[in-house]
Length: 215
Ligand code: AP5
Image 1 (cartoon, rainbow, N blue to C red):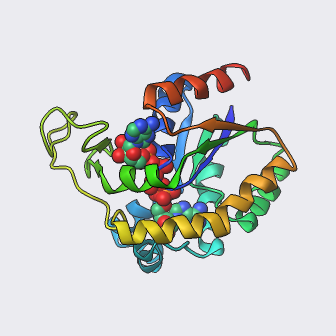
Image 2 (cartoon, protein in one colour):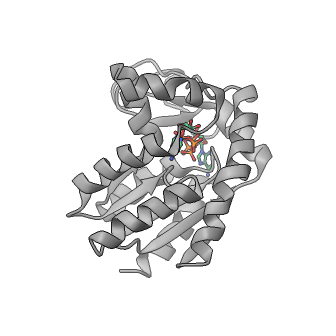
C-alpha cells in the first residue's frame, strides 16, 4: 500500500504515521524527519535547509524532490506512507512523474483536517525524544516522567520551529503552498478527508477504517 498523508503542521501526521506503520508494516518516509537528520549530521543539504526550517518557510522544491526521490527509490519494493511530502503542487507533479515511470501509483491520499487554534496548542506543547524520535505532548500525551522519554530515558526536547511565532509562519505557508496540493489530488485521485481535531485514538480509528477498506 502507498499512502500520502496530508495535513497542516500539528495535524498529527507524525503521530498517526507511527500507528499506520505499526498496523500495516509500511515504511514511514517523513521529509521533516529526514531534513532534521541531515541537519543533525551537518550535511550540505542540512545546512542549506536550516534557515528555511527555522523561519517556518519551505525548503526549495529542487532540494526536496531530489531527497525524497532517493528515499522513495530505496523503499520501492515495499509499501510506504509519505509524511510532509509533497507540500507544493510542483512537488506533487514531480512525484507523479517519478511514480509513473515505475508504474507505481499512490493508492490513497489522506487529508487530516484540523483547526488553527488546535494546531497552535498542539505544536507549542510538543516534545520529542532526540534518541528514538518518540513524540509527546505536555498535556495531551505526556510521558510517564516529566521531560523524560518512556522508551529510552533520554531528556525530551522542543523543536526550534515549535514556537508560537514560527507556527504562525508555518500555518501561513501551509495555506498558501500546501492546501493547493489537496485540490491537485482531488482533481486526480481518491482523497479521504479525516477530521483530526479529536482525541488521537478516535482519529486513528477513522483513519484505519479508510485504510482497511483498501486491503
Ligand atoms: P515537518 O516536520 O513536516 O513539520 P510539519 O508539517 O509542520 O508537521 P509537524 O511535524 O509539525 O506536525 P505533525 O502533523 O507531524 O504533528 P504531530 O503528529 O507531531 O516539516 C518541518 C519543516 O521542514 C517545514 O516547515 C519546512 O521548512 C521543511 N520541510 C519539510 N518537508 C518539506 C517539503 N516537502 N518541502 C519543503 N520543505 C519541507 O503532532 C503535533 C503534537 O500534537 C504532538 O505533540 C502530538 O503528541 C500532539 N497530537 C497529535 N495528534 C493529537 C490528537 N489527536 N490529540 C491530541 N494531541 C495530538
